[in-house]
Every structure is written in structure tokens, then in C-alpha cells.
Image (cartoon, rainbow over all chains, first blue to last red; front, side):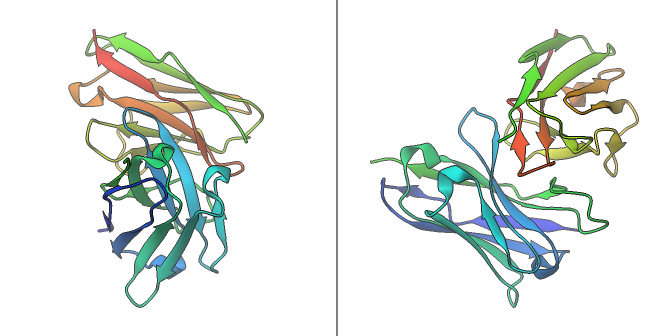
Length: 121
Length: 106
């Protein structure tokens, strides 16, 4: 059974930094395309970042240069480093995986329960 | 960026009735369209991908159709557990989601 468990969310001041973690079990982070998706309070879903098995990384324009996705293969974990945080980054951040089989495309079959980041002074 | 638009924003349906949800893309996404269900306080759950392929464990009352720029999710006979928010997502290029349709009890 696949489980994704996020942690690291907090109340943080504008301009601050935070690192989110996603502990994976039942899948191998290094062999899957992994992603972060966020949801502002009461709003819809927004894709944030992707990391491919080969290590290539991609970001939505609004976070480029501020957020960094990475992984630790030895811990089977995914991370998102959030820098220069803004009020509009306030959201629940979900870790999600792309189906491993068959190059089906970048949709998300497994999701964590999410971790809340609140950016406010 | 491909903009995804969902309609209606809210759909009021009685249990046992059919629900039809629409999703439009600002440009063709071929059949690279997924649907998700989200209940309050929960993560999204994948329902459909490839516009019309049900994900593992999804009941047959859920069906998807469409290609190009127009897509539909149909729930043939609404059960109590189906009242939720539904999102479409294109993955032809970098993923973008629609704004969601809330299916509520009439």
C-alpha cells in the first residue's frame, strides 16, 4: 500500500523560509515522478513542482527561483524548500505521485494528507 | 498556460439522480484529462484519467468523455458518498486544474 506523509508546515512570516518533507512508503521516490500540489484555503488546486526520476525539476512560474524540490533516495523522501515566502503562498501543500507504469502522463494517483503553510505577520 | 474552466460551480442533485459536470480547456489537450474527487478535509482522489479511463477501485457509475477542449464527467446515480467537489486537470503540458464543481444534496 502506498503512503505519502507530509510534515513541516507552520506559521511563518513573509520573507521567511520553510522546508516541507514527504515520507514515502510502498513506492520508490527515485523511480517515480513526484510532485507538490497546493491548495489555498477555500480555493482550488494548483500544481507547484515536479521532479523526474532522472532528477530534472520543474516549477510553476509563480514559485520559480523561490522554491526548490529535491529528494533523498536513502530516506525515500521528497522535499520542498520554500524561500522568500509571500502571503499568497498560504496553502495546504500535498505531496503526490505520478503513475509509475506506462508513461501515462503527469496526473496524480497517490496523495498525502497535506501540510498547512501559513504566511502571515 | 492552459486554462481549465469547470461548470457549473455548484450542482444541486438529489440522491439517485444523474449528475453531469463539464470541463473546458483553453486549447486542445487531446485526451490528457484527469478528474478528481475531494471531500472536506481530505486529499483529492483520482477518479479518471485519459478522459475516460476509471482509476483503480472507482465504481462504474462514474464515466468520463470528451477530447480536445470539451470534457464531461457523469455520475449516473448519485450516492450519498458522491457529494463532494470535483476537479478536472489537464496534463498535456504542465498540469493545470479547473476551479472545481461542488456537487451538493438538493
